Image (cartoon, rainbow over all chains, first blue to last red; front, top):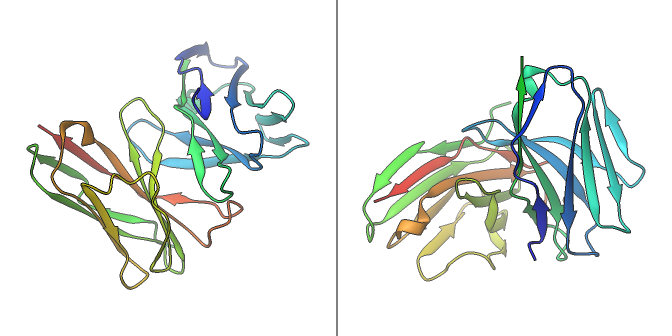
Length: 110
Length: 115
């Protein structure tokens, strides 16, 4: 089983749609969780951290379910500019290193 | 603030040749990472430095890969000899410290093609 698993997609959605991605992780001792965004042929950039209580940043909402070991990212009112690959990231059991999922590709169409 | 710099941006070599990549982190960032990103996959950590010391290199194929950060600032990653499966983007990242609470900033990467 991979340490961090994501549905690779692509998710094809129209502008204005709401889309959700899930990610599962295998290490129950993981403590820190993030979503990164990676545009085509660009470097990854931090989108948001994921807190136990869930957190929201504009149109983006991240949630953590420790019991089921998954995190989610919800994007409301999708924009063309949201088209990218979204990487789920979890710290490993050594504490300080990050493990990246394979990414979920989102394509927002006009 | 200048970002993480990497060079070269692209490199094409034949298998069994050697190649080196260079990274200059954001000024003041003590921690530097090298990742390998194969097409269609997420980045995989190869090695992590804290200043000029290695924090973790457990996923570095040490029979062919080596990395150094001698003065605790810029870093080089070398592959010798290269294999076809080394074709990937090599990403360098830096952060203020080793804690995951510090955001990692990535450079633009070096795209390596081994033929």
